[in-house]
Length: 98
Image (spheres, helix red, strand yellow):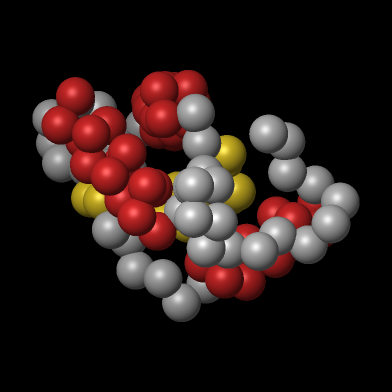
């Protein structure tokens, strides 16, 4: 699923007031972190993940790995905060048409 610019803008607006639901620790990206992100995506559809990394390249690799493993859409990355979206069976968030 590829999000259009209009859809991403809509999701950014919805994500603005959200707090990060998954905080990555110093251990980096582990199976437990991926499982927690999966649970949060299934429940909320739109989440924020706080990525703990000082190195920019490491952060980008971690974000790419999270997106690949969870099959979610990356809405945006601001600083150390990643916004992810994955539609669930319940379709809680109604996206605008492309």
